[in-house]
Length: 405
Image (cartoon, rainbow, N blue to C red; front, side):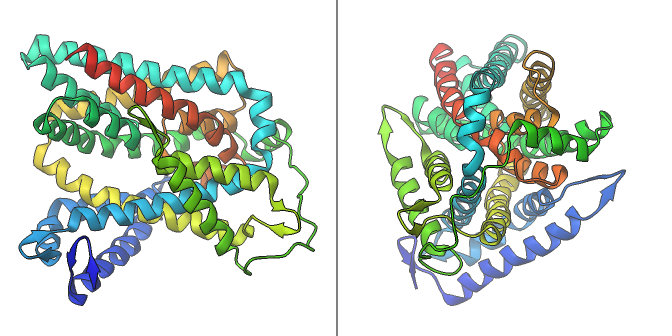
């Protein structure tokens, strides 16, 4: 079997497959544990993946070797990227029918909130860099690389991570960025996941009422499908795959150091396809049942791929002060963004939290919020805020590196 530039044995592939399903099974069991109405849900998969990476990463390295070279990083990246494509494309299709109407109605709010969250994250990162240099006497350029890596991990932002690596000078500082990203990623995922569950409980929100407010704010659009359209296949796999291919292609287009990445490309294309639903008499949107399965499967695979690699980095490079920095850069944007959306923008609770997930570019939190809210309409607010935050976090990461170079 030719893979990753070498030949992997069937035994190695089977071992990796076994690990993925074992992590998934244990993760979902952990996610079912509920304490005072709060549970990890699918994020339980991420916790198990982190633990697996922390304690079993080396054995997995030994299994996935070709001519003495381990391909575990490449293997996990494929799992992670496949999951991300499945998740964001499904979310785009789901949000598509109401996306443009919602965006038109709340356009200014989504822009302001997305920008505010990233700017607060950037300012907190700059403050931490200055503190790290003044108090701990670290080299300014190295501190900037570490802290911007922490910022990208706190916001679970792969584009920011890639942009920071591309902006620093040399492979040594690229490694520092990667370490920071891995350390902060843990709380970046868990912090936002718990936030979107705890806030409704602390506010004693009536979810039936909140769902009604969301429906009034984002009214259900009548389907453009009549039932007489030609389906490319019964489950919508063909339409889904076409959007994924086009999204990946668009995401690879670079303007300077910026690109939409696979996430942005697939999200935007699926929003457009989901909005129009058909081309002539041909249906170009998969059934809701397919989208729900792909959304959950994608989130699971994404968390496994990111979690195993993150667990290995977290244990190897952990320092308590970096973890504290990561918490600050996660919680400040979250709290300030939520307060701003509630009292200034006057967004209802579910639109608020959906926008927060998008502003924090948090894929796992959206999955949790959909479960907590009991409706997939919150994906519309996420999809509207996400592109603004995506562009802003890439620019902020690069600016911080350049300022403190």
